[in-house]
Length: 198
Picture 1 (cartoon, helix red, strand yellow):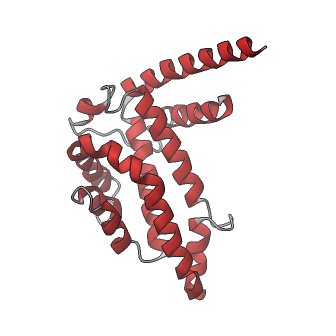
Picture 2 (cartoon, one colour):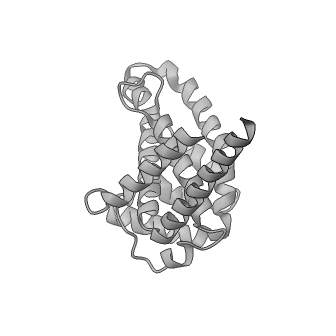
């Protein structure tokens, strides 16, 4: 448990320390309705967001990682047989992220405003994440399946979604502080449990 937490904490700190170079800070006032608010973007939600971001990064991979989305995106032009794999990967993505869609539901209108800001500031007005975010509740899977027609589409979608989440982490200083406190408590609890076992 400690190693994943160290990785997640370093990801979060990297997001905050390099903000001026890489990440956006959302200016839409809705960010204040989310940042640090219980059951919206509090410390535990920040942890979950960092875990999801790590999983998306792993799925995306890079062009040298066999079986990653980025690798398959460069192969698909010369290899139409991998389209079956695309269907499987899309289904897998939807199944693994249903909880994310449900978790976002209470704040969906606020999140859509931030996705719009992200797309405008990142010059990604044609981003699939905007179409996906604006989908009516329950239509997200269908929109995703209709919009992702190649591994290249999937690669761009994951890149945009991952960067959006990193920008969201960067834009929530209260939630980051709450996460640090949550992390300390988890570490202390783990230390106590370890001592009890000895």
